[in-house]
Length: 129
Image (tube, rainbow, N blue to C red; front, side):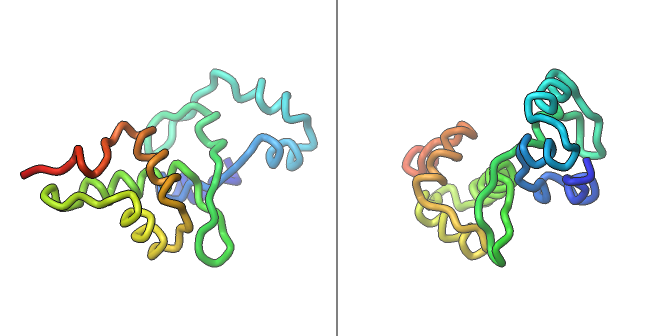
């Protein structure tokens, strides 16, 4: 939990990329021990109840050489789409560019993948007349 302090203080947007290996090295244990210890365990946080494995998230490069959690990127993606003009929805390329302006380097294909994982249709299907 020390490694995800920003999440506990500020919310999902501040979730950092983390893997079992990092925690195992910090605690001088094997990765499989960490995996077994966190399996089927939940934690209540100021932001809701989460499975402990939720905090082990992959990451993307952001501005300044830091990494940002893929879960945080998905949250930003969801926010951008929810605030778009329904008559002119944002394309995957435009979403990638907007995320780039926020310092998150992401490809159009990754945006499409994350959008699909979130169950959000493509821009052509989100368009309202």
